[in-house]
Image (cartoon, rainbow, N blue to C red; front, top):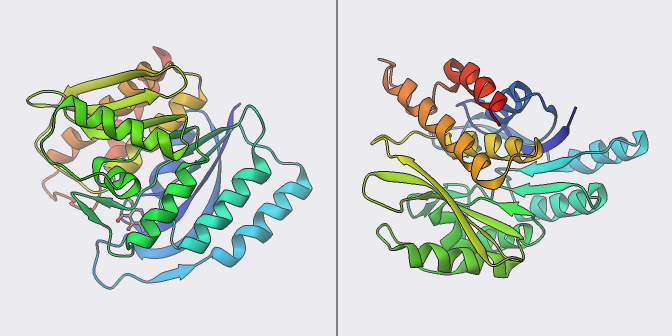
Length: 278
Ligand code: PXL
């Protein structure tokens, strides 16, 4: 069985970060080891959330794993808290990485042209140093603009996406993937760039006119899982994008309209079915 380490916060309520990554990766048949960076009452789009930083626990926990000889096929990082924490995570990646380890960085820090409430431009720059050590990174356009310094655009041509991907590769990532990319009217998906081969790849499906929080974490978790399971690049994008779209469709049927996160739980069986076709 493949084993992945995922490093991100636990937002106790809110269906994002670890409460999404752990069930999805487990459902994909991957042993999922968690390193919680902080415990929050909810994610940071709720007012008045509590937050207990766990930065001082990261080294003792991972030192213990080293002593136990624990190893990982992949390391997947998501929402982190502070610039110091990013440095610690880079150190942890250095410690546990071997030539076969897949390092997948979701530089979760913003959306719709803005950083999340807890972050500023310094943090964004620091996140670029984490992307520099990644095999794969999957920012949305907002995050990519903050990482590269290129302008954020809501309407664009494919050329803008390619330019953004090349700028992300210039940070050091082997295969950057830009998410939330529309390559045609009514379509959305992702486009990636293999810097070594100078080739692009992409997947698009129909855009569902609804936006929910936490869908980026769902997409990243399934994409990271698919890569760990050895999926080919376009197939990995397809499984992650199709599943994310299905979680949104399912949530639209919910009369309670949970803006804070999607009803991914209801479609997990479809994910396991899709994996059989990989
Ligand atoms: O979904 C990304 C995310 C993860 N964790 C926390 C967040 C957010 C987005 O706002 O606040 C704590």
